[in-house]
Image (spheres, rainbow, N blue to C red):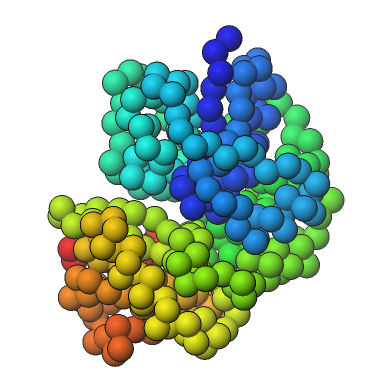
Length: 306
Ligand code: MG
Ligand code: MG
Ligand code: MG
């Protein structure tokens, strides 16, 4: 049997890391003994907390992918968010909950996309469909991904199915969703020892609309003010990143997960942002009340106005 590489997007979040590990488990239990989970970047603090609590090893870092390698993508489909050379691999499967864009294959594949809050919710259904039992640690990994992606069910991306699946997983994992979830999210808001350059890369995604290359980055915090102390350095890091990567619009969202609002710092084609959110920027910034989801509340209006 040939090796199968499983991975989520670059600048991985908890869903990308845990869904790779869970998919490895599901593949192996389904007979694909050569399935192996990888990651395309550093483990963030929230994910670090999850892996430590569940006593699970982080997947190995994947630096490059061999041509024609067999691949399973989780939590993304866009080639811009995947590993370099992805277009030369053989993508066997995609399990994802994002809009399909910048994606194309030569051969037929198994593609499951659902408009739910988290990849783990879809993976849960695959275990059910294949009648494979979910072990407590695997349940803990999936539950953590749902908590992360839905901000403990508070994000507008959260669906009733995510919540229902999370409750079933919590029973299997014997985890109290609220207390564990709060601790987990809190671990992710500790931004104290990141440099500005690291901050804008913790959770950053490239996308494109109307031929305009843009980068939308996000951090979770309990205090927007605290993050803004670094504003000058953040702006410098954004400028450097844009120059280096040919990005025309950069949006950095500082998301207050306690009050569910975001402050954005934006550079480049900011006319798009002003139109998208009907705001006038001040010092390259705008406050977006009620905005927490990049996927549902940031990317669509920005793309529409590009
Ligand atoms: Mg993700
Ligand atoms: Mg996800
Ligand atoms: Mg996310």
